[in-house]
Length: 303
Image 1 (cartoon, rainbow, N blue to C red):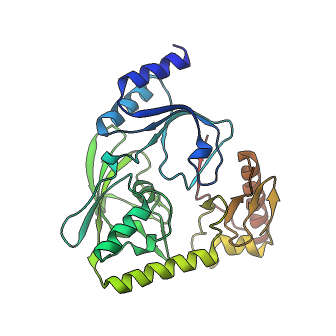
Image 2 (spheres, rainbow, N blue to C red; image 1 turned 180 degrees about the vertical axis):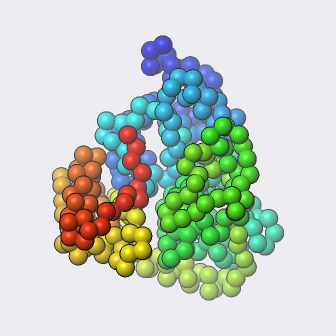
Image 3 (cartoon, helix red, strand yellow; image 1 turned 120 degrees about the horizontal axis):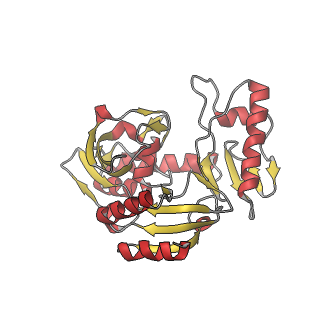
């Protein structure tokens, strides 16, 4: 079956919006990436299962992309199916009393923080200004200010590798710095721990977090956020090591190590994936030479 007929066949099986040859540059915060074989806004769980079954039968790769903020696709594109869960079914959010919040995987972190602020609920304020979606954030245990979203997870609804929908409690999930054991499945929903707090104090803390981000991070130009994880048991962050090696401002093509935050690579306008990958390699080699430290990627490569 030729590629177009195959995609038509998939489209006939589902009730989800599907775009063919959709440029990933439209959906990544770095504004980089060639066309995806198919981009699908997944309507609901039933459609998700149908898409995954199609992917298995046709041996077509499939990946998730939420806010597109920690991913590096290639300019040649992705010969697979990209799933996005930012649809009403996966964006439900409701309180379960005063101490728990049920959140769909497609809810943005911005929406999550805004909701908890309105309700005067603390516990998730460290996600202020952090891009992305709740599902993606939990999968990589995102966070800031020495706190991570995994600290607040009590339970998740998870589609495992066997395509079974299961509930995983806190003790069944392994969180570590910017990682978890949830890579081989799809987070559908989470139950997060919250607590009533003083609304004025919560608003002020969120305001201070935003001020800190604006003062320390390059938020004006397109970027993928922090490129590297901080070294384990290290006394210095990746950004500090890169800065000490004098690499701020280093540029290949239109990809540049941010002059404001050394762990950011920014797109000056027309950066390509090759520019970014080459700059990553240059930075890693220099830091290894100067500090005997192997920098580990925090962003996900999409090939």
